[in-house]
Structure formats: C-alpha cells, structure tokens
Length: 558
Image (cartoon, rainbow, N blue to C red; front, side, top):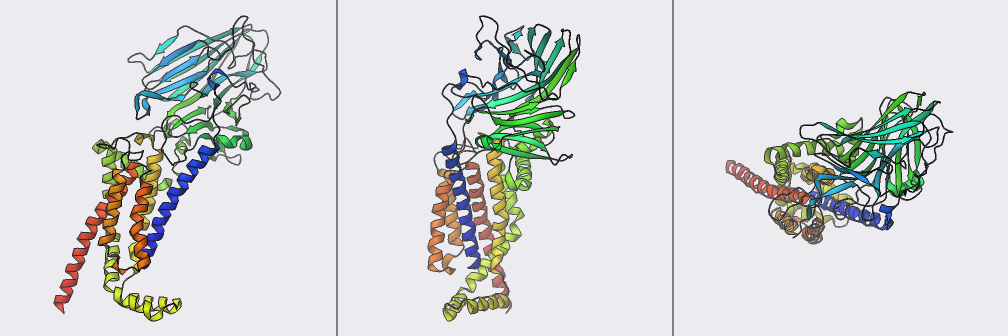
C-alpha cells in the first residue's frame, strides 16, 4: 500500500506539472501587449550607434533625396534560394521579410510558408544594418540603395547567391552584400566602403533585429513558449561564456549593453531563431532594449576601422535565420546549440532525441519511432518492472495480515509502522520496490514532453489516420480516451482490493483526471504513455503468470 501512495503522489505531480504549464500559458497571453495596428508602415527610428571604438561619435540619419519619400515600404527586391524567400527594401537595405518554404505556417495552410521575418498584417520583425562612423551621412538603415536587379534566384548548380546593393554619396561609395548559400540558413552580410574623400573616416558595422511581440505559426495550446533575446555572453571577462535569455516583455527592466570579444546575439522564438554573429576574433558591443519607436531591439556593433583617403574597407557579419535544427546548430557558432532549450532535463532530452531521430531514419514515421522508443524504455526497465510486480503480488498475499495490524494498532502510528516494518523484514519484501519503474520512467516522460515541444524536426509530424500532428492534441480525443481505458485496466489487474476505500476512490478517479489533462497535450506524448500502459499490461500478465508458476512449484516441493 505504501507504493500505491507513492504512485498516487507521483500521478498528482504529473497533474500539477500540466496545471502549471496551463497557468503559465494563460499568464503569458494575458501579459503580452498587442502589437500596434499599423507597424508594417512604420520603422523604429532609433539613433544610429556610434562607431565601435569612438564613443563620442554619433551619426545622424541622412535626409532622403529631394522629392523622395522616406517610407520603408518602398521598392523591394525579391530573393529566392532552395530554402528561403526574402524581400529586401531598397530604402535602408533592410531585410524585411524572410519566408521558409520548408516549414508551413500551420497544418491547415500547407502551401503557406512561415515568415520568420515579417512586416505584414500588424507584425514587425526586420533586420537593419549599416556603417556607423565619425562622419555625416555614412550608410545606415535609412540610406537609399540601388540594385542591378529587382529579382534574384539561386541558379541551378550554383552554391551561393550574392545580392549587391549600392549607395553613393559625396566622398564615398558603399556596398551592402547579402550572400545566400544553397541548403543553408546562414547568410553573410558584407559592407564595403570606398573612401573617395580627402580625409580619413572611422566606421564600424552595426546589425540589429527589431521586432514586436507576436507568434509566428501555430502554437501548442496550454504551453508557454519563449520569445525573447538570447545572448552568448562572456563570463567574468575570461574565456568562458554563458547563454542568457531575456523575455521581450522584460527588456524594459533588463536592458543591457556589453562589449566583448566573440559571442553572438539573437531573437528567439518557438522552433526558430534569428541571430547576429559578428566575427569571433573581433570585439563587438552587444545590446538589447525596447526600441525607441516600437517593439524591441537586439544589436551588435562591430569593431571600428580607419579608412584612409582613397582606401577601401570590408566588414563581414554572419547571420542565421531559420529553424533550430539539431544537426545544424552546433555548426553555426560556439554555444549556438543552447538555443535549443530542454530545461534541466537536457542530459536526458538530447540523447532521447538522438535515439528518436535514429528510429525515425529507420521507420520514416515519428509516431512509429515513439512506439519503438517506448518498447526500448520498457525493455530496459523489465527487471525493475518484475520487482514491482513481485512486490505487488506479496502485498496482495499479505493483505489480510496488513489489515489485521492496522486494526490492532489503530491510531498508534509509531507502533503501526514498527509492526509493518517487522512484517516486511520477516517476509522478505520491500513495498517501495514498486516505485522504481515509475521513478525511472517519469524523467523520460517529462524529457519527451520537452523534445516534442522544442524539436522543430517533429513540428507538424504526422503519425497515421486522424493523428496528423504529433506536437498538437488529438483533435478527436481518441488517444487520451484509450490512454484512460488502459490505465483503468492496469489498475484493475494490479489488485486494488488491497487498498483502503479512500485510496480506492482516488485511484478510480485518476484515469478520468489524466484523460482530461492529456486531451489538451501533444498526441505524441499521449501515444508514448498509452503504448507504455499496453506494454505494462502485457508485462504484468506475463510476470504474474510466472510468479504463479514459481509459487506452485514451491508448494509442490513441500
């Protein structure tokens, strides 16, 4: 009975865990401000940063040419590669929209790609860049650019595509180059400056991500996903780094600015990340704060260079604009794998995903991979399960003696516990042995929850029949009901007659309660637990028959 109490507490822990997730989701929704109604037509007008090594230098926004409007929605050029579709505004050279054709915005819109960067429908998430310096009217995110083409497409057989923008002004010629690569979400942002003036100029590149609060694509219900800034920060001025995250809503109080060598800064959201990756061997100034116009800003200002008259300079900044693919993030930059957040169970979640990925490669179906994973977990715990069922069998056998002890000692808890321990010692069994399978499986269950929540590889992954998205709830609640039935069957064959009436009532309610909760969580998670219950029923039947044969053999020898 003691192990039953432990199981009851553990099941209540599961319920409380999901209740916390639901509460957090509701709280985040309530606390998130709605975006401004016309953000697509407005650009945050923040001061252009000073050149990296010249704190007193400030660059003013250049005035538009006579007769030209400064609207950000002016002429744009389109760019298409095998994994991206982008729109770059000639006003400012901003990357204002980036679609990912391999990732539909939702299951209901399979032909509509998700837009990671976006400035439509009341949203704003853009990438701005330029050269800050000691001189008026250097190239900024308000400068006007020209381009030889209005449309660029990665040619068949080509490995890269350069989109070249030019900005000419008295004394200098600036070029902004976006370099895209085949099959890659990494983009190189290159600034070149030719100084035709009679005096030297100091300049440094800046790149910033500006966005408002919104969710791109469908989101799992009752789950709070992170949207905010991620910063790979130098720790204590040494060679060690740490990854720090700040929610967008917290930037008003937790704004920061830090100069350091190496590192990177990013805007994180569910499944996807947009990151600015300055050269690792150069110092950069990283900052994040609310934008002065609207939304929030994450920025990196690179190292300054002095450009003599008649000389040229080149500044390179890396970008990553895409999904958090687990086989790619380690290649992007040091520490970039930390954008995948599995929480405190990362040591379990990472190998769990690795195993799931191998099983998926074998079967071609994530649902089948989850079923095979469950089989492997249950097989690994077979000996623990056997110990559990042996303990349950002995509990049933000695139930009359246990009941007699309870009646004999009544409310004397100290004598009752001593008598129970004496019985356990005399008969040679441990009632807590039945807890170990649950203790081992519970972290796997929670780790799988985070794998299903965080792994973009499983996003919108189908299984079979009506289950077409393992990261979303069962639309018809069939799987949660089957789970509840399997749990009820498991309880019945476990011998609940050894419980007291109150425990019996609570345990009878648990399948109903968990069915209700599981109805709103990922069907892949319910599939795992339902499969685990079915395997557990089969194991229990087999082990119980085995124990009966062992007991019959002992009786025959007497």
